[in-house]
Image 1 (cartoon, one colour):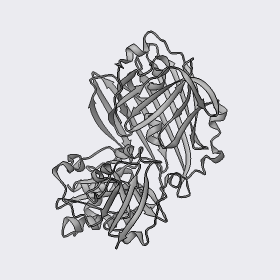
Image 2 (cartoon, rainbow, N blue to C red):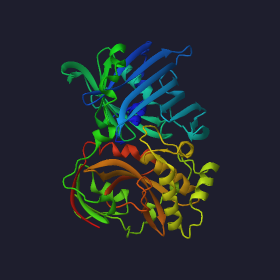
Image 3 (cartoon, rainbow, N blue to C red):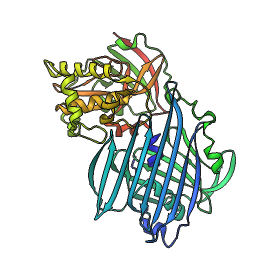
Image 4 (cartoon, helix red, strand yellow):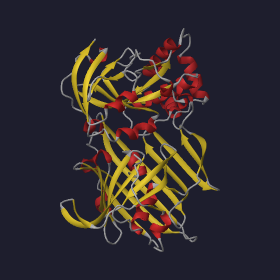
Length: 470
């Protein structure tokens, strides 16, 4: 949800790609202030306030403030996002600055484009880290996409492909927009004439509806998120019901069948529909396809990883996984002290993370450096900290993203995996187990930036539990 609010809406191409200059033409944007309510189903969970102003140099200042309320496991959560973007006259990026405030941490990020180089700074855990990315083409942030589309005229089957930037993942993403002619659409119970534009970026797809005057009327995003144009007073009325939506409960998967004593099963056979089985096989070496929609999970990790399954990035420092920081290295040395083998050292690390990190739901972006100070969080924080600590001592480590069975349902979950003797062994520091049992299904792996790959599964995946063994 955070990714959608920051990045708007697979990188599939349409036909007739055109450049931003042609879309904008000679259109001049007027100063504007707009408000959108954010809904999940019938529940209002937040708002987005956007402003655009003309700069003396012909460029634009775009600011966007978002707020989301909800709960996780009964714990109230609130997220505040701020973005300030400076663009040139074609709405291409010149600079940006933003923050995400979600207790107990605030993450800051900013960037500046100069001489075809994007210089970035991320501050998490109280420390700033820098990164430089080549930018041979103009870059567009999602905050500039809506004004660009409102000003332009993408016709039926026209498409626009731009170089987008995801400030959360700190990486480039292709951004594709597909246009359509005006038509009658049913929006919030009313028939409205509008153009429907489809945007795709970083695994997120959304549909934007724009009226004849260029106003955004509604946006339908992944995970059932809906944005609705509202007055300021209506948009700000968030508290009625917003804080009562439990995100984990809302997106939980209710399977057919059940698992008894789920923390101790060694193998499990599932029928999975709604996502490609091959995606599950690629996500975890424990998962084997045994039929068109059947998969077996073997917690003993008997399959050796191929060379293609080893990604050098699993050894590297990354945004939010600050494995080179002294505080992370020192904690890893203490946690893994007297380990007699790689496996034994990682077992000790899993125990240390489980004992040290208080179990508290968190809606923010987990940073290992922040977590080592707060020692609080949910499965994301446990997995990110474990991953950073393991990488700090040279052990290839990645994060598994998927779902775990608990109390009759599958809840979306994260857990780490480490390469040991050619096998990706999966650990479970959140629950205090040395190895992950077979009551979980991985849908993606990598760093938390891979979470966008889950967007297509949420709301579509169905799981039938066929058999389990202990």
